[in-house]
Image (cartoon, rainbow, N blue to C red; front, side, top):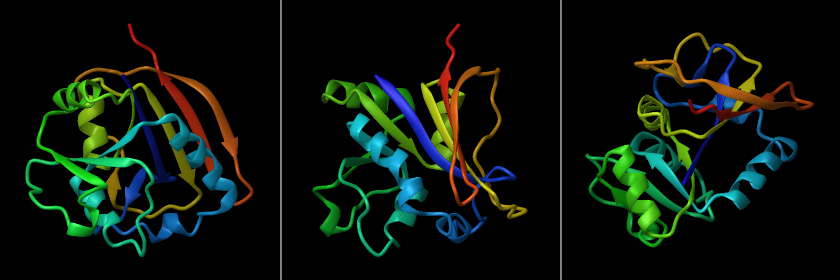
Length: 176
């Protein structure tokens, strides 16, 4: 089982404004920047998403995913009817969610959503980080990283820069 985080942050480390708004991030979307995401989607079997991120995705003008979505939530009970065949809710811990997905044939998981990423990092369940830094400071918002009980070391693999000023860094977890 491999878990991968692919996420964008402001220079000051926020993934969204306090209200979940990502307008500042969307300004940097381009075909050039989208290519690494397309490469990622070829590698993954499914997306494991947090409830808040799922709720944000529901506000998008169209459904952006080709892969099955699994929403990890203890409070979400219903999925809109038009997404029933695309989304499954799992009310499990991070490790139990991975066991469930593995048992159902999934081996490479894209983990998405601030709180979900933090809980996976806290349990040392992330194998790769792909983090885009957008050249904007937003001053306050939802932080990508939270408290950890111990250090997690990652090896820097590469950093790509794009014509719009965005930089994307790729890291791999260094297990002890």
